[in-house]
Image 1 (cartoon, rainbow, N blue to C red):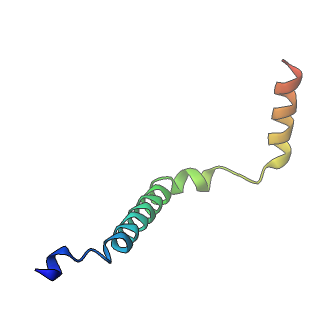
Image 2: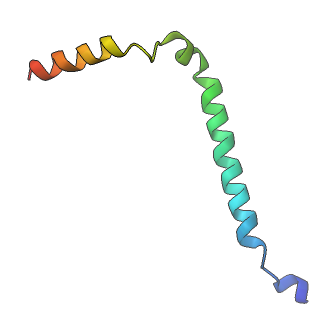
Length: 59
């Protein structure tokens, strides 16, 4: 009966399962949004800055 009440490794196992779940969700999200990431140009800083400046000026 000593083995049944031994809960020493329970916290570590729960953290491993939690981090594993987060990693699976992150990978699934990357797979789903791969086409979106490929088609958008995230390094178009000049256009983005100009858009922000124009939106601030119009307010």
